[in-house]
Image 1 (cartoon, one colour):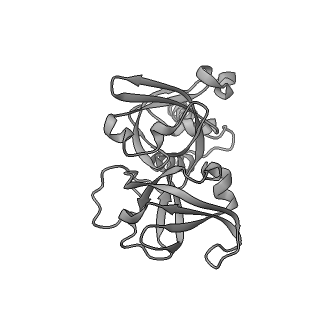
Image 2 (cartoon, one colour):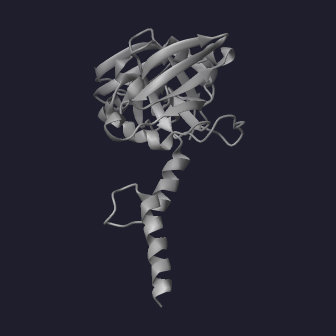
Length: 246
């Protein structure tokens, strides 16, 4: 579990697509350096989030640590696009003594979003983002939480068209935006993202739990998945008609 409050930015120092070392496990590995500030209490097997992705430390010293990336992680996130020298957001797993300044973040990336515009306003930066998987938009609400490359941010505006437009791209398709203040810009990787770049996204998990409770409570095989309001209204109408017919 994480908070989305980035502790430091590290730097990718090595990438192996087939790491045959003992700590590599014959798979894709990434080594991050410049992480001394978060490795003082690090042990093998600990969790560290890299750009919002919860990963397991397989090797570490005072400044550097290594993690392995599974095929699912490479498919789901932007970590496979990293290059040596790239900066990444880092956060250790939540401890009982951590000040909770962000929100509940699992480190389980839902999808990626593409930057479709960057706009500077005074000393702030606006990023407009479009999801690769439009279905996540139902969990994104104005002033709600969102995690972008491991950074806990507040959603500002949401554009969620329905019908054919739901799968459109650019301004006509689904999008949301966030605003970064000057301090945040200096401590995370997001300001380095340009139009066309992909960013890891984890939506607020509380919305998922609410949906699961509703889907279990209002399950109806005759209704399309997600039409919980329709199911509820239909039940209420049926109950009232039953009362009137008695």
